[in-house]
Image 1 (cartoon, one colour):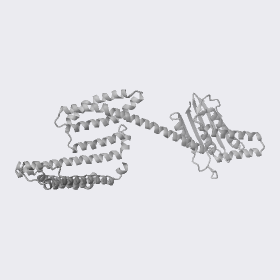
Image 2: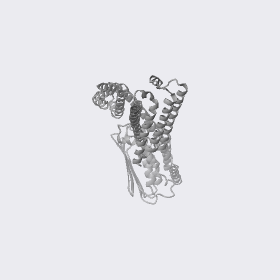
Image 3: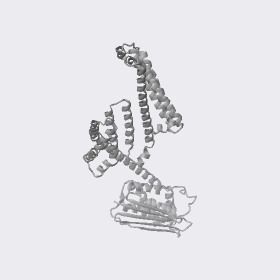
Image 4: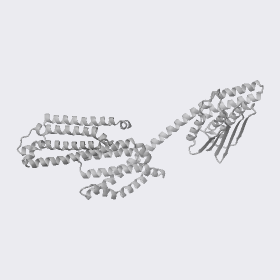
Length: 507
């Protein structure tokens, strides 16, 4: 739909082919009637007035001429006159063109009526009949121009609503996209009723009650039904609220029906009230409830799919960031150097810790929640291995204060390590003084985690110097997915230090 809106030429093509199709079918039926002549219009009236009747002269040719006038006038107005007028271009000239078309239609209709209604010549003097026919057709042409103006207004309003539906919804949340579509259909339906010369009372009843139904639907979807759902109530509670709104609306709707009814007929007002009550309670109410439930179910499914997809992507990205060949290479180099120094205790401890970490990554990392104690073990193993790698450098200071006894608290696996890994990745320099501080404690099921590290210029020979921190971005995504509204992450950075503070409400 928006592709059509963005190309007004396509709308003109649709209108052109639609009206051309109608014109061709009209000619086809006209020609079919001339061949079969099962139905011969006005032939009986000509016979009653003792006048000669010719199907071609008194119906076919005048009607064909009328169809051609309607077709040509519509194309001129729609394709050549209204578009520049809507853009406020050549206003005076286009208004003159509209008047010319109006008078041309009036004269054409009046002239063709002298042939189609020739049986009236024995009832009126010639001059009086011409006056009557032309006056009637001026009024009819005026009505046609009003209907065309109504159609043009519907078209441009519909285009505006569809083109700006997102903006309208953001400004007025009570107006739903379904409500916009329904309002467009309401305008089209009202136009068809008017162009079809439907009964005035029926037009008023249908127009007012369906517009009221659209209003109630938007209000129900936006406010009424969500309130009922929030309180855990059923359709019955919603139905009674809707009944109250419908009863209250009886008086203003009755007044509207009297205003738009030129005869001020109270029967139409009563019909509007009764039809409105039945329509809203039996159709609008149940339909709104059903559509809201369907939309709610669809939203839950979409949220579930997005969450599952987010978990999958987050876990995959996290595995990619953690299975880091550069990190493993450094650790193995450290173990190799330790072995050369023939300090077997340190070598064995390093290998054991590395094995525990790999085992954790292969098994427990696949679970949704693990014991906080196991997460801390992995964290301590990582810090110990990094300390083993850097302990020969006196200018590197690593401080770790991690509370050990956490009870039965559960946490998502590998949620804390990205912050520590980031600190060692960017906070360690073998040429400058470096420092890392890590603190973790729990209180009343709330975990408080702080990590800070010094900042150094990146080494151009570092294979990770161009990486953009997949770990930190990923862990922020995981926190939003796993602990919505239950975590607080603060990240600060100055010229010398990078600091994070994380608070999580655990189960």
